[in-house]
Length: 237
Image (cartoon, rainbow, N blue to C red; front, side):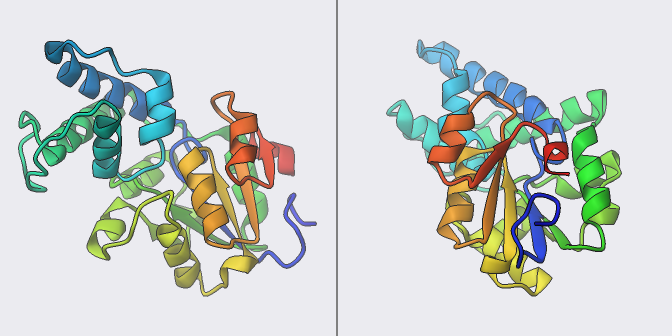
């Protein structure tokens, strides 16, 4: 094995938020505030951590809105991608969250996980490396974290929308990343912290799925498709 990966693996596909950078925490806060502001006037219970994990984490933004609202029996018009953030449509709520996460990132910055940086440095030259994320802000986050230099391919929320790919837990975005790197899925490893992400890696027939446990969900990551679960990528060195 090389860097904790089985023989035959030649490429690594990393999720962004929660795997490469600590921005998953910021996204969680932005989603909670967005949904709580929507739910409170309707007398609905607040957005919970379990809601984030089950319905939102790892999914494209508008998919997260649809899935969570459906869990509460709430149906809204789809609206349009350019809906203003104060409009109560699927797109309006998604845009409200995006506006909020932009502000949080500007104020607080982006920090890569130290163990992830060590792993990327060791993997560079040994494996082809790509990022696969539902975030539409991937370029800015990678640049701010100093991680762009490691990436040979990027599939993000912009690409997912442009190419009409199904978001995680469907495997489409990871399969697109493998194509960009010129490798078969069976020769690539997926690194994910979200349950939807490990489900996508397993559904896509990838050679190895690494679950990254940042939220105390080791067993759930295993149950949803991870071959191995670590708390930090440095454990694989």
